[in-house]
Length: 497
Image (cartoon, rainbow, N blue to C red; front, side, top):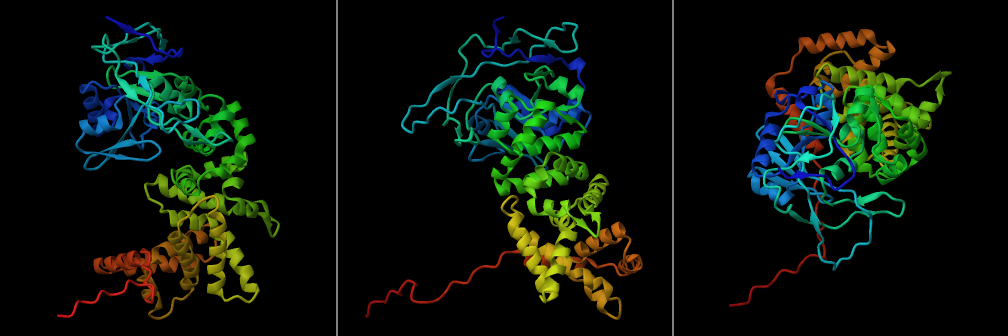
């Protein structure tokens, strides 16, 4: 049989099936179907990234992502339920009844040589990769192999791919576009951390490791692939992801990776605010938010992402340090770990609560009316935060309502409690009230009274539906009315008969 020797000098470490913990029964049935179907059509397909990492650690994966040598167009031909998405890099989403499996073509990290708009496409050889022929057991837990078995028919020339435009970077080295197809080795090298660059082969059920990810999993280390200074400059958000993975997995950050983060932390300010919003939700809504917060503070990244909030944390109130955010994130973690879903507006309301209420109190001292003071405090703080994290406007408005509704819990006479109970936003307001009361020990009697009242006055299905529809109407953006004036199109006159 013809054997294929990788074109790159990297020799992958192969861990055969009998020496790792991954089993197909722990993988999404739909992901397994996609892997096998790609294999049946002659393509190489691997389970990749965090799914492999979590399976090896005995954790339940959040996603099952797949990488293949098939191009997006070829994937679409194989799967009728496929949709292609993305501009920077085309991805295939395979839609099933209850799940979407993401499939990406192997990508490459190439030199940022000048692009020529009129240049002809460059042909690229994509070599074969490990196939369905089982590896020989060398007697090692994970042996380094000099070659990888070739796929059937590998004697013929490897398929030719046409390269899309090459990578683009800023003068400072940050990647703007990296839409370049590559080989499995190149795909592994362009990933962020070693523990996220492991491939699970459906062909022989082995784990393929080009970057030492298995070793770092055993040691409990988050290590960037390549030169940390270069990789963090290319994409500063990788520093935020390093903190998230370290907190989520209980790992340490490798020394060189950590020092590079301390040196380059300010570059996180260059990241897109809309992208940072998605990253912040991942930081604090995965069940280890408080630990993540402490590590962000330790590395200085919290001050870059939340500059104004960080300045407030660094000050003292009546001689005591501000510990509000840590308590808020502890509360969120307890909810997530118990299986409750915490929406973004509750997360940000809890995180910013004490700071915004103190800011509003200062404005009231200046003679500003309470509702106006609260509105102004939320607006100013959220507008400034939008320079780093683009928190949607509807979330800011919901936060304002939550803070304003807190005074309503003090009214317990007559029909008012029942009226308030049925107002849209009551549940969010009570969640915040309950957190504040339990954290500070204040208003215990009021909290107990409302809990008893809520239990004694359950909402009917009709009332719940009406409240939900009311909230949805309120969340919808208002359509701007067109101005009538001389700018409009003149009406065409009908010809006289």
